[in-house]
Length: 66
Image 1 (tube, helix red, strand yellow):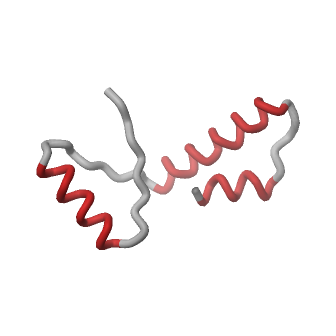
Image 2: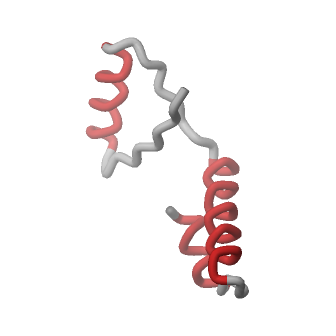
Image 3: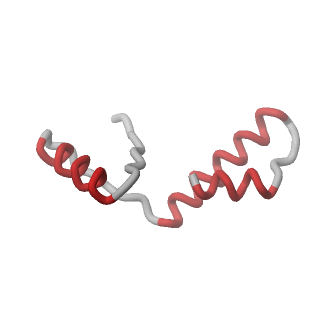
């Protein structure tokens, strides 16, 4: 199974995407705030591993927001 993360720009887009997914038989899900933070932390950790240096606090928080 493949997992996709889609970030709509507004509630209207979110509603249309959910309706489409439901129509084609795909159950849409929503990430919790904790799951979003976990993804941001993982991104920061991977970036740090890639270039073998510490990740700045600014980069860490930026990734948490995305």
